[in-house]
Length: 80
Image 1 (cartoon, rainbow, N blue to C red):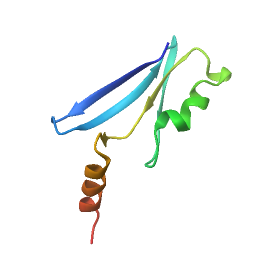
Image 2: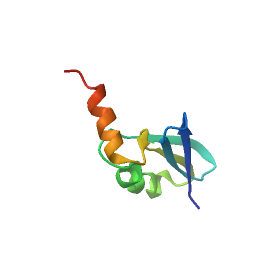
Image 3: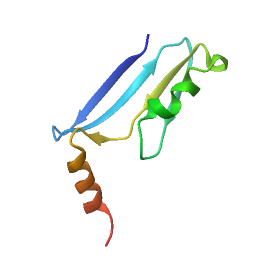
């Protein structure tokens, strides 16, 4: 059974979230770029029969639960 975890940073509403798929073989960590959730991109890959038995950790990038605040913070961080 998979487990979803999260860690909040600095009490500001910023989170890193992940899905942890169990397995006895060495873990494979899946990271993605901006634009969507890791499970949507890597769910089919991590669950592929050829990877059976490996622990798979699908990590989402740091995000905020308030999308408007995230967009404003991203815009403020971009040059010019």
